[in-house]
Amino acid sequence: MTGTEQRLAAIRGDAPAKRHNARTLAALTGNPGCTRRAVLDGAGVDKPALAERVGFPARFGQSRFAITRGNTFEAQVKADGGAELLRLVAERLGVPVPAAARWTDLGDGDDHADRARRSATLLTEALPPTGSRPDEPAGAEEPSPAGEPAALFDHPMLGLVVAGQRVHLEPDLVAAQLGGRFHVVEIKSFPVIDGQADPAKLAAAAVQSAVYVLALRELLTARGHDPHLVSHEVVLVCPRDFSNAPVAHLLDVRRQLLVVRRQLDRMDRLDTLLAEVPADFTADPVADPATLAGSLARVPARYAPDCLASCELAYFCRHEARGQTGALGRPVREALGGIADIDEVLALAGGETVTDPERAEAAALLRTAARLRADALATA
Image 1 (cartoon, one colour):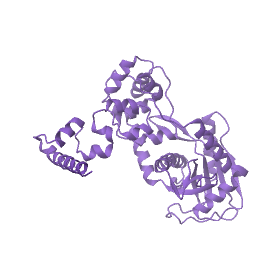
Image 2 (image 1 turned 120 degrees about the vertical axis):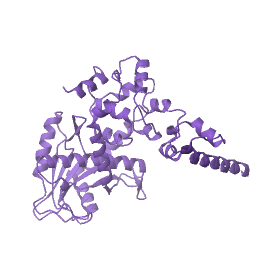
Image 3 (image 1 turned 45 degrees about the vertical axis):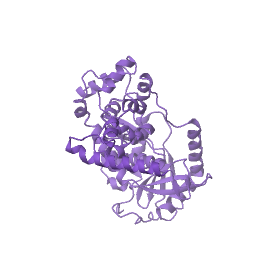
Image 4 (image 1 turned 30 degrees about the vertical axis):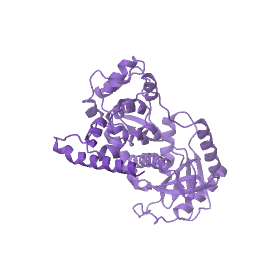
């Protein structure tokens, strides 16, 4: 065990490290500047238990109803050997619907390592034939050659290394031999109404899908194949309008791939982050609550309202950030030019004398905003 591994083990206490999944990796990208979260996730700390212990339990997560609805919709879409799913994916990619498809269920078994090995073998056996053109622009896919049926892999087991640990990832489906590429297919139960999906859910699906694309590309790279045989276009299948009829959309996840890769690289440099963390820092959920709260306060956080939807410690950090401009959101914090304290903002808006030239411009804008607000209220 390296020095960094020993330090991370000491931080989380006697508890085993929590394993990441695609959802937690996607959530990491939401606030990449937060040292507190990077250290806790790198150490594999049980953040829900930690939040409960310090008195600020997490209040988000999928309901049982949502999970059941999602499983039902996925089973419906994959029925009959994925015949309807194959048609949806092929039509969305703009290629002829293959007459046949090999369906391989890789979701059986509790041994993740064994499933990962089997998935890797079968996925690489389904590589498009030599001569495919993975660098063609979007929309330039060609149909699979005659005699090469499409291959659909149900719940393959992929992997990524996160902070030195192997993380197992399980996409809904991977389609091969469609347009000469692999395509990750994600099935979500949130509806697409009049061609529009909920922006927050769509963004989360794009980042989660990018995690799968990255994992599949790294699998091909490790086996000596071109990673760009995995398309950056993900097929998202959702219910149309208020029915259960599935509809497919393409998500271009190139930007999300860059964000995920950058955050994973940051997690691999945990020794650099740990150098700024107090030597006695602990996040052991069985420790005294007061000790835990004081320990957490010594590691910098970067709270923003968006954290409430993705981080289990968000309510603790929000309480800690009370009175700070960051609690109002990143746009507000940035617009105020680095003024961190809300009381200072109100004082400047009220006409307090400014001696710091760096505060002068912000003070002028605040006074103008206060005057405009007063005028608007008077008019009303």
